[in-house]
Image (cartoon, rainbow, N blue to C red; front, side, top):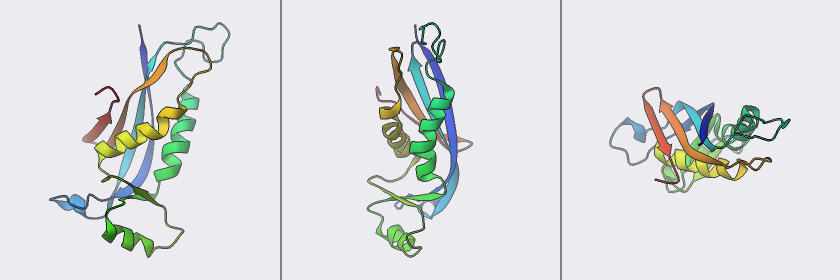
Length: 151
């Protein structure tokens, strides 16, 4: 039997979808929610700090902060092939937070990217099985995308 937990972090992040048929082709931003869903067995080691947990929520938060929040909060995520946007962002100087990625920064692609950033850091010291079940990205209150490595 397995247990699932979720933890999330929010960022204010800009992007654009350069070839989009509608207004998403313009530079804009969202209040993103980056949510990791973990699955596994609870720690059964008596007296362990994480006894009864999959992984301490504060440890999950630390990982989300370091590998997601601190990378994309108040940053602009731009596709490496979007030369127009890259040129515009380069005029803002080295102080501007720009993350250049090898994919169009849709919610779907960002969910996979986030999974790849966080997955190597989800570990336990107690021998319980633990994995990321899915990574969910909310772009707007009505729009979510999820990436699951088993799909």
